[in-house]
Length: 109
Length: 192
Image 1 (cartoon, rainbow over the protein chains, first blue to last red):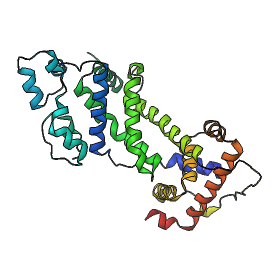
Image 2 (image 1 turned 90 degrees about the horizontal axis):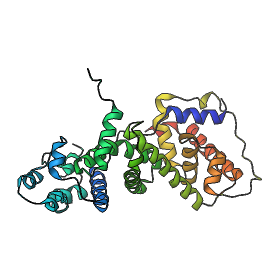
Image 3 (image 1 turned 60 degrees about the horizontal axis):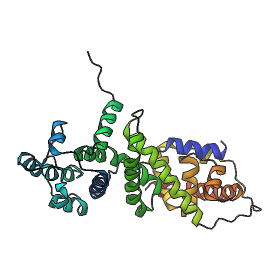
Image 4 (image 1 turned 45 degrees about the horizontal axis):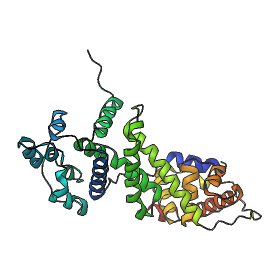
């Protein structure tokens, strides 16, 4: 077999991807960066609208959602001041178990 | 009876929610795409893993900025992998540009036709290929990955790196020779 063809066949038959998942810290950092990017373009979707779209809120977001507060507080990204974000961005297999918390869902458990 | 939603329908809806700046949709987007994206980029940059995280973040940011152009004609994961392919090629281009590749093509390296012992043994080929590629000097690894796994011609690679096609051909020839030697001399070691 011609060497050029041999290498082409080798590449075709040996995808190099492994089963290794993305580190949870990386997922957390990506999420935080995308949220920051989103905030530069305008306010985040209010929590009641997120909930109405069928997406769950974490316990802290749920608390804000039921409080009689105005739009600026409803739109605020509470993850910025949450321990779960700090842990998620720095620790693999971080002990975060809040339901509907993105940083908890990013853990490769 | 309504027809079941396809992946593209679901992905289109997710993309619209991300564009509406729904924080939980953004998390879902990261969950959906980060593993395949990471696996692809890691496989193309191995063993230089120090670049992987930055490239993954760069792909997500580019995808975020390009999301208004997403038409839902392919799954989001595939769309993102398309962006990743371009980023990996940019990385290869930068690496090869920075490396000293001799431009005079007077020296030619003979390439013997592979014999029976060069036959592709599929059982060992994936592990051996990954191990040999990881052990090759960086210019050889990059040029082989770019040529055969990303399927770019030597002419295209030359245009993108600003080198001559002859210089790229010579680098490819040396890379193939080095790969072949390792394949023939230490296949067992490579799969361990």
